Every structure is written in structure tokens, then in C-alpha cells.
Length: 311
Image (cartoon, rainbow, N blue to C red):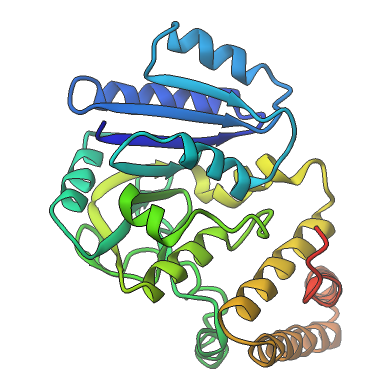
């Protein structure tokens, strides 16, 4: 089999169906593929609707976890079952607009040292959106703060849309991977309940000597740039926004300690706290209560979540 597509679903019935219709419409009879929908205990009838759409065929399978097992573990269930030479980790809030996915599959087939690739993720208006990022480490955060581009290196739109070049990591909405290399590097680390799981996987691939590229010719719509929203829905289990931000900082801290050191993680935490506290002070002086509230919440969630892996 050429391709296995893994989609994590949680109460996104219409989005998932739209994604499935677009993928099957452009891939049917073009290559051999399967779609594995891993449902994290949806309550909106998603499994039933997807099975009805599949019509009893083998191309689309629904695996119900029976609980909200998190984003990384749900993807790993699909990865374990995947029979394709390549595995595409795809968000449910995406859809294809042409058959350019075939070009990415062909590209990976003819390259030996490329672990996987991202693509050009388009906004709803078809303009290029956030498609990849830089590893969120100390040097990256320093560059962001010094250049006034906070968070815009960790997540960015393509510098050269349509081209092919090396990147640190793709946006998790679309990550096409060679199965043989994935088996060598290992699946997603399930210590990441959500956030940073794709970052960790990409980091381990680079450490193993493989490249990751932005494959610009492949284009997929990513609705409203809402992968974080959909991922959050598929793993959050009704948690508050504060708890979600806390989990985000837990995951980021774990990633830094795993790949660097506690000292490295502490340095990033110190820089983030300095940034948020400085902005809180500035906005309090100009009586911008909305901005103060935002930065105050970031300070609290960072302090609460950093170095705490009890999800």
C-alpha cells in the first residue's frame, strides 16, 4: 500500500467528513491508500457518520478509543495500524483542493534521507498560512525577543511558497512521513498529551540524521489556521483555557528538558517571564486592562505549568 492517512477526530463530524470527501475525491484510483480515523470518544455522532460515508468499504476505517486518550496516543494508534509505505498525519480541519498530495508522495519515494515533509497550508481565503516553524529553543526565543517577532519563528508562513527546502518541523496539520524511517525514529512520545508532539518527533528525526523539508508544491487548505483549536478539542476534555495554557507550558518544558537540559529549560522560562512581566508593566502604565489580563494569565499559567508533567 502506498499511503496511510491518520486523522484524529473529536466532535468534528462535518469537518472530518469534508476532509475525507476531498481526500478520497482526489486520490481515488491514483494510488493505493487507507484512511484511519482515530476517534477520541466523540459525542456528536462522528464514528457513525464516517462509517456511513465509508459505505462498508476498506479504504476508510474508524477506530474508537473509548476515551479521550490525547493527541499523541491517538496518532500512535493509527501509526501502529498503518500499512502504507508513507504515513500522513492530517488534521480534521483540512481539505485538499487538488491532487498535489500525489507530488509529495512521489517526492518522498525518490529521496532517501528525507524523513518527512510539510506542505503549503492555505488559509480559508487560499493565501499561504502557517506551514512550518523553528525548534522552540533558547536561541529561537532570543531571536524572537530581539527582533520583535515573538512566536513568529516558532510558527510561520512560507518564505518561498511553492519551493522545496529544509525546515526544522512542519505544522502538525500536515506531516507526511516515510513509514520505514518512522519505525526507526519511533512514534510520538505519549508524555505529550498535546502540544509539542510533532516538534519532538521532528527533533528526533533530525538527531537520527534525516532531513525534514517544506514541500511547497503540495497545497492543502487549513481552515482559519485553527489546527491548535481542533487539536485542543480532540484532547482537552473540557479543560479551561488556563489549564490548556498550563499544559502547553508543561509540554514545552518537557521538550526542552528532554532534548537539552533543565538549565536550558530554566533559561527559556526566565526569558518568557521577563517578557510577559515587562509587557504587563507597560500595559498597566497605559491602563490597557485587556492586555494586562492576557499577560497576567500567561504569567500564571507559565509558572503553574513549567516543569510540571502531571497532565
